[in-house]
Image (cartoon, rainbow, N blue to C red; front, side, top):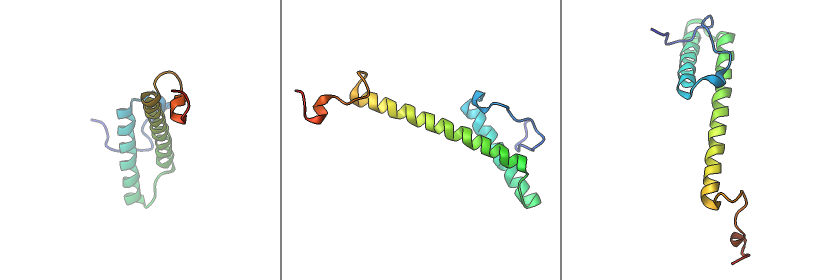
Length: 96
């Protein structure tokens, strides 16, 4: 059975980009539970736990930004079509 927490001595992936979204979110949950545990037991978090949480936040933010960019591109293609990123001239009152 896997731990529900992520103690500083446990292994941590070297490259978070290789993890799937569900694996990354599970790891983030374990790290957050570890932070809570350390805060209750010791009054402060272990620096390694804080470092890991920051790495996880950065990777999650990177993925959120990537997904938002993809969604924006899909919306633009849906509005303007595949011909390019510029809106058709008819939107500017030119061309008929």
